[in-house]
Length: 139
Image 1 (cartoon, rainbow, N blue to C red):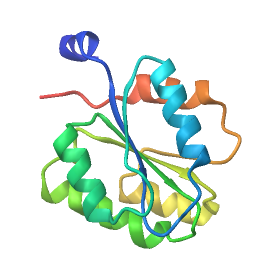
Image 2 (cartoon, rainbow, N blue to C red; image 1 turned 45 degrees about the vertical axis):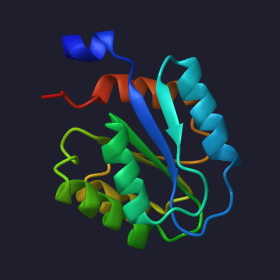
Image 3 (cartoon, one colour; image 1 turned 90 degrees about the vertical axis):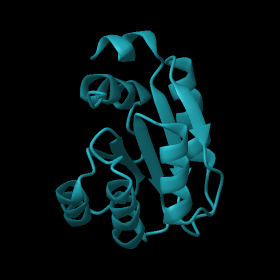
Image 4 (spheres, rainbow, N blue to C red; image 1 turned 60 degrees about the vertical axis):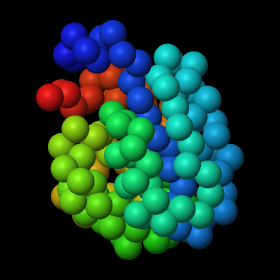
């Protein structure tokens, strides 16, 4: 962790991408992140990949947590990652995905650059610990 990261709170964007209308889990995660001392921005429902990218870049987030239960993760997550790369924001953003993701798809998402996939029932402490241990260095 750099000196700047130690003095600055970890900034997270909890994002709901696509037509998925279930956001209870995203609210629970956002609250847990806040309780852990992170600064949290919540995207709201039904965001396009481009909107998520814009929010991540404008908010200068360290962590982008994408919550997706619709099954469209193979279409939407790559678009978000591509957008982050276009803005040169991918390298210093820890991308996480939460939701119901089949094992084969999890492997594919990680090959694209998703740092970790968290399924239903993952303890909050595990997710928070993962973030603390894997934050990208800030230039």
